[in-house]
Image (tube, rainbow, N blue to C red):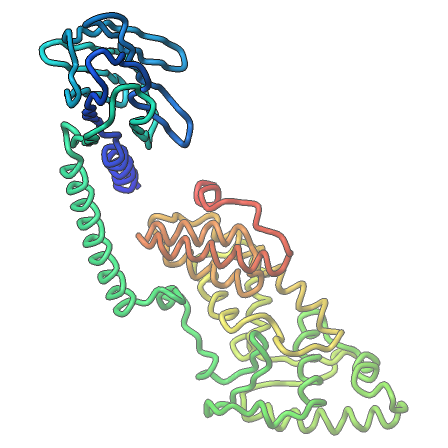
Length: 442
């Protein structure tokens, strides 16, 4: 910015000097045409600008050997005597010099050793025209009109050269920076910007046997084979009903009938339930140790919490305030995404909302208690997990931007804020009301 300002001032100075008005000198020579006794009287020269007469020089013989030269101007009338020889035979030459400058114009009339000076005549206009009037002066005719414009005392070429050098240097610097930036983009692209791999999250979703609900329904058997496709829609929903209601004490037969076989009579519903439970037990036998049974009229799915991610989540939430190890386990559970992603049955909506609220509360409380200087990597993992459930969480945004700055990545910090602004605008139809400086200083 400073370089641009200096360059602009230099260009302005050079322009003023380049267009500075140059002084003008007019040499007007007239010859007498009549006999010696012919009086001299009339206008010698008009100075005009834009067809408007600025001033007029008049010559008038006042007596033998005497004459007066008069300069008529808008605000002044100046008369100076001029000594002439006793006789002016035909062909005598009279030479007049008029010099005009921008701020201090003058008029010099020379005849022999006599002269007449008009000083402090201000003709501060451009494009002056000097028009001799040969027919207007009795007894005189113009023989020579010579107009010379002098070069300024201090020519502008050094300033122009300086401007040229500055422009050349600035252009060279621009080319160098442009080439360097292009190389950096090729070597290290910044769009999109991603955070380095997690340090505290180790997903076992695709390795360990079990039933997984976070990120979508999946079942892995004891041989690490994905058998999700073996579950028909009815078997899948029956298993989900058992898993989700077991922590609450189980689900009644009536609730199962109302959800899955609402169009069947009681006998048909019981038969369908018995067949489905039999098939479900066979499928889960290859996954691990599961027991489906009725407990005081309510159906439950009993299993170790290591076999069902939702069961382990419930255990962590019941613990209250999470420790560091519990938080790392929570991050592993929720890394895949929200509970029952892609499952859109109405009965699951309330459950998914409650789970999301519990996750956000637990992780936000833990994140606010972290020391950003020593635990920036863990904080980034926690903020990423929060964003999976609430992408417009302002607390996670502020902590994530600060953590990136703490790790020395200011560019990533600003990019995260910019992406947040765009998503906020798209969702709410209005700009995000807070600035980056406010976010990182909060």
